[in-house]
Length: 292
Image 1 (cartoon, rainbow, N blue to C red):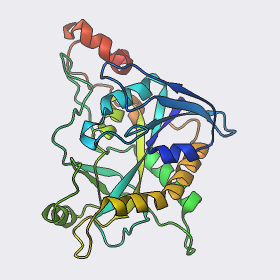
Image 2: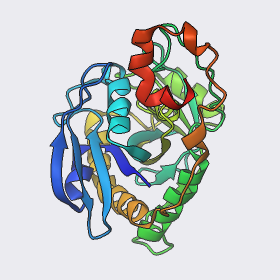
Image 3: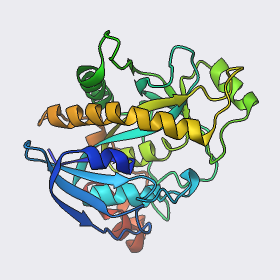
């Protein structure tokens, strides 16, 4: 197994038991990542973990403007094979109350202004994306979260496996009409960062799953008005549970866990190798090198 990646907020990283930490500033063809990648040994497991704060250490970049391609490319350069992510999300269902942890298995893309692929510029890649989160990691992350923080006791955290995350552009929250529409479709969560992160992980043959902490009821609920204060307060309260779930997921990840994502580029390149411009070949070599 290669390095395990984690994409999330800086507060989660600061709570993870990383030893022999080093920061690596990667240079990518897609610009600079959100921040340097922090790499260290996870506790006494001997496993290497690479952490990348999605919004930068000072949370200075809007969801639309995040350097998603640079971030995932940097993790690929770091030797990452499996990524756990975390998201703060709104709930579209009454039973998914703030404080609930959800490991979604589907995404509906409502974004409009983001670079969704590493490819283009003379190379066309048509890749299946029916299951946007790696099913093997969804199973593992759910089991880890249930083991770490779940339970029927009053102090247990509700952990839900599966559900659809609708990814909106942001940075504004939804209108009431939009929120009511998302709910009417039977979707479960609304957030701003699942896309293109999940697509790029698949294009890099990195297995990817996320744990989403519910912070609010969006605005479909008659008495709900989403504010930054509410989101940040509930996100902070969710932080300990997310940290415990991720820690358990890293600690118990099987050494031999092979995921379909790890060979997901097989048979997907639609451009003859000799027709791909040399500059493009060089740019995508860390991603497509085995298939060119």
